[in-house]
Image 1 (cartoon, rainbow, N blue to C red):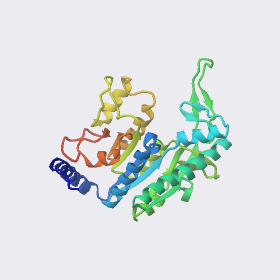
Image 2: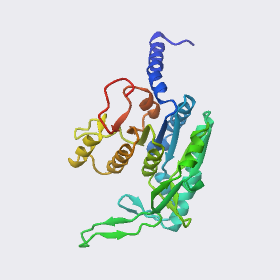
Image 3: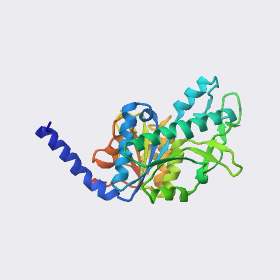
Length: 306
């Protein structure tokens, strides 16, 4: 069955629009934090896998860093292990850490690898423990409550922060046909494992690799202003002003700070994109419009491919 004229014209327009982006990003590294609905909706899982395979085939170097909070919570509930959170971070005792490693390092990671490979890619799953990829340290959390006159340091267990990324491990993949899929589990010098926020890991990996783009998939259309309009083409000063004005707050703040840190450290641009849109990654890389919020050091020029 042949295409009608309108469908054929639309396909040709999309292909020709993508050409300058393919040319611009050949050989460039793009770090993608994969999470939210995109990891649980069957259609979105398939579209994400195809997007990553296509990026690699046209000469880009995608690096996938994934989360898995809902999957961890689900298994903990089945095992009758209580989930507790402090300042948005999961309290992770030794028993919980065992579950985190099982879910992130095995179940979730291997499913993503399998999906990418099934669509013609060559993905390899790693955790931060493999080759000392992610050197971590225990995170300290300071909490201020009405009951205490001074801030209190709360022990949340095996929750870590990134001290160092071993670039040599990632370079081994980037200089080959393989696509690394990274589970955000770190390890300290004593061999203790730590659960680390996937956004933070993706940001640090992007910084170390001096990536062209850092993409953070979310369940919302992007960064929105007070009227609910999606903002894009922002520089660091504009983002900091929105934070000061209280427009950016709550759960979006950590992602935005991660994006700001990345562009301040040499990443060309960071993107908060809507992972609920099929093929969101390709739309952000290969089209003029994109599907989310672009953040960079300086105001981007208004030209095709910017």
